Image (cartoon, rainbow, N blue to C red; front, side, top):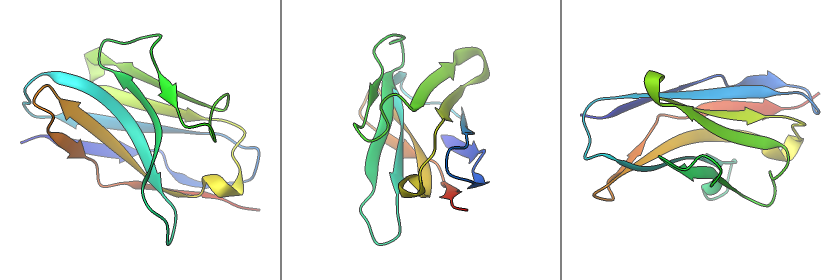
Length: 118
């Protein structure tokens, strides 16, 4: 069974930074991609950032976070990160890690709350 555990969320002032981590364990049929999504209150879950598992230099971002957020991974630690800089109140939401394996199975983490406010 695959498990994903996110951490690093919290309360931060506008303009501040946070680094989210997602550590995964368990067996899966290889890994196709990894990414982050978020869900604000009353809104649909939306894509934030993603990358192929072997795709350094092939990251993709939502337009709203380009230039501010960076996704990266450490295969040795089975961890994917989301560095978030210049945070805005509209970045507030629950952030979810997503791993997709080679059979297109989706594995979600439990989510971590990010609140950007004075």
